[in-house]
Length: 245
Ligand code: SF4
Picture 1 (spheres, protein in one colour):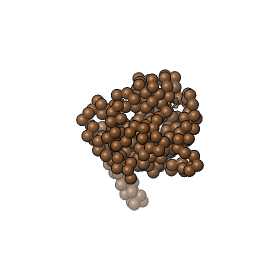
Picture 2: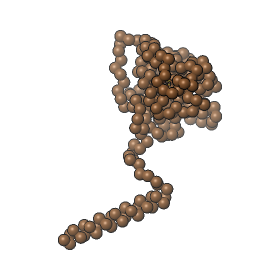
Picture 3: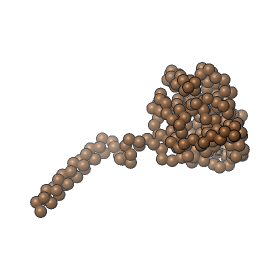
Picture 4: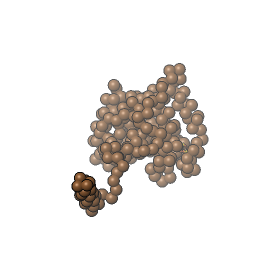
């Protein structure tokens, strides 16, 4: 009986300590307890899971044909609500044998008008970045997380990305580049399934389904924040190294 009492007292004392600890956290500004601590920045959705294996390469079908088939399958897509406000689908363009695939967020006004990725002011800067890497635009592949322009250039939402990204995944799997470069937070976070800001995702090499993956700032952000160009340059050097390996 004495032992029971002492265990009960110990339990009550520990509960009181825990209560005071949680109260101190609350007053310190902590309003919820994350479900996971080590990997709490993981997204829990989407078909982009970076850990899934790449589809096995079919040697008899060439990448260009797979890209054509994918574009045909996409057709005049109405799978998500973005189709209602777009002018043209921006499928993506470049070499089916590209060593580098650039993935942006979504088409803007100029891209929507022309049906081509990165052709506005940000596109001009991307062209310079590609040239600095030692490649011509036609030698790399450029595409986006979603293929239709979100109204007012808003960030595409999770549902739109989930519906559209299987086509992006087919494009990447067809090309099998040496390195993927995510341009901006939207592409980096959704492909890596992480919620960390781009400032934390850049500056290191990740992997997406076994392919080296580097995130850097979106050219549109660099136009607004030219002081970050030196950080982007470091990312480009890493991309250049990976593309040659
Ligand atoms: Fe289809 Fe993608 Fe356009 Fe949505 S964003 S309508 S899924 S092509």
